[in-house]
Length: 231
Image 1 (spheres, rainbow, N blue to C red):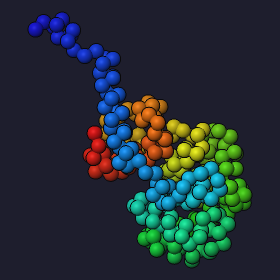
Image 2 (tube, rainbow, N blue to C red; image 1 turned 60 degrees about the vertical axis):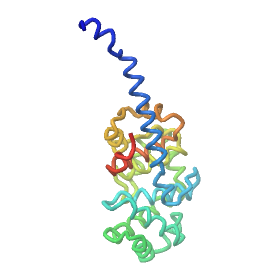
Image 3 (cartoon, one colour; image 1 turned 30 degrees about the vertical axis):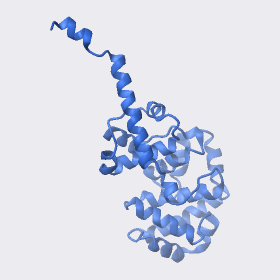
Image 4 (spheres, rainbow, N blue to C red; image 1 turned 180 degrees about the vertical axis):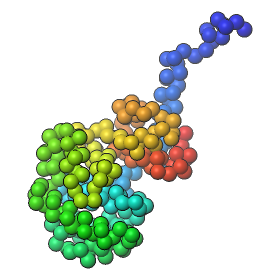
């Protein structure tokens, strides 16, 4: 077979791109279907643009920021909520011992003392600066995601990773944040052989909420078994 004949029969760039897109769409559909639960959902938080669920998400992001298993952080968030510590006023008023005890019941023991202190300090910050309502923090950022990220990092215990966790989860109710696929989510995409561009990933995911897409990709990044279960 001549080189010209082989070239004529070889798929063109457009055909290859279309095939790659179909594969990516199928992988994302399967990934989201199996592993698209957000961390907020796992923690029992029905996320809305109202003060209490936003604050509970902030607490969850603080808990997930420590070097501890995600399942333990989620369990601790559930325990804090079960103890009634669902808003910054109650969190601050409960006292450090009550916070330590709730964290311990969730298995969050290695960092319990430090985290209990940070949660108290963070509650006071949220109350004093934003009146207990994180929508005011959002307003202060005025649609600037970088500014929003900087403001979040002022919360004790919330470093760069924790701020990214909050932004990944909140983009479903704060649409100006979307699409927010941080380095952790994009590492999941890379593990699955998917594109690294957030806009393209969002388009390939179709009508999937960006927070759900981000959560699924992060789970693939964190667990090889998740990545191996799709594709």
